[in-house]
Image 1: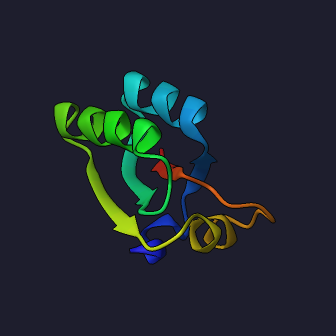
Image 2: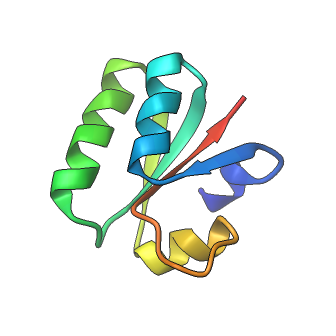
Image 3: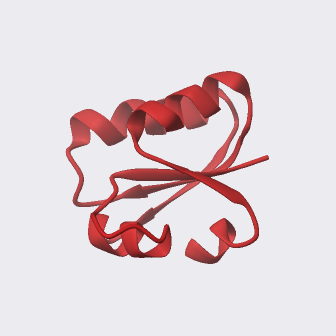
Length: 80
């Protein structure tokens, strides 16, 4: 699932992800299972409502590393 981010521009974080989903630019979303559900559940609902594929990874640190940042990330998306 993290391989879906390769070769795409990636946005990281809740605010940027919401913007990408609302603009119709997010093509694939990854959410961290250990992130606060108050953050991830609304993003999951937005993905379903906008018909954007999404998946879950085990931890914020794993997602942050996949995005090339030194801190954890609750959510990230590949965008076009």
